Image (cartoon, rainbow, N blue to C red; front, side, top):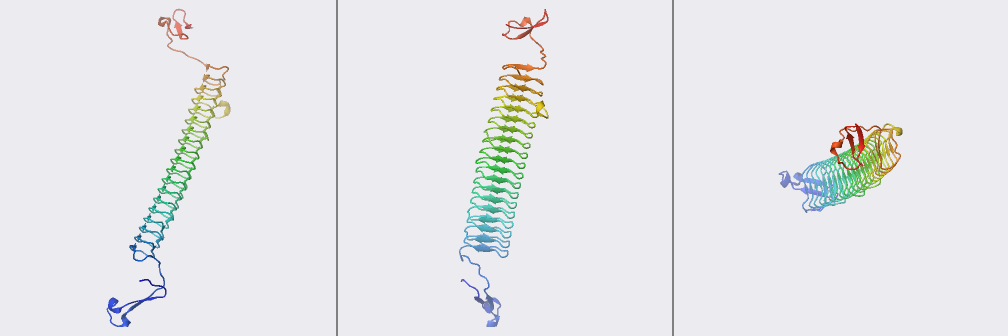
Length: 358
């Protein structure tokens, strides 16, 4: 039976109060009608002011919960939760909403919202999913607007690239076009496909397939496959360049490597700086020549190809040469070891001199 305002419903006294005259009847005046689809398997288990306007839907309890115009949905309990999405579930919490999609789940928390299908928010507060097949585990003020993404938790994290992930942390932004990863930390950013920041703070991975392990204010720029392991204020500019750590090191050459140290710059193609350097440009090590290297020390500059420096305060003057400040050679072979390969140094025991095998 359907009723409208101001219909009156009379329950006979013989059925309700045990009386036999109209004076014993119970009369109820209809003042409000909740529109629904009557008789199609809706259940409200209890609570207060819960409303269903769909079919095959269940509200377990709580207060002020609403299942509107969606079928096969569940609200377990809590307060002021709303499903406007078929085949979706809100387990509990407060003021959570699943709107305009299907097959999504909110586990609990408060003010969490899903606008897409096949997505999950586990809990937390003020989290938003705008993309299908995405997950926010918890935390607060996290947001996903790309399909098939995941935010584990933390606060203020944001994803807008498909197949991307943020594990947690604070204020991280995964802006990769596809497959970017931020493990955690704070204020880290990825921009390109398959780029990664493991953690740390204020690190930026801009190149495709680039990686920053952690540290502070490190940058892997727009060239592909660059690597910064950690440290602070290091920048890998060229593709396939590597900075393992240290402070204010810069890899400008393709395939260049800096192991660590302070204020070092590897500009040459396939050049290497092991470490060393100092707190200003005058103390830094620099490789300008291609396929060149500096083991360490400070104030060294390689200007020529295929040249190497071991020491400090050295600037190369020709290619294919190794420069040292002081060379101490021990355990040289003697003439008794002859014949030796051409170019080998050996010590003469009779004259106490050093010779080169011609």
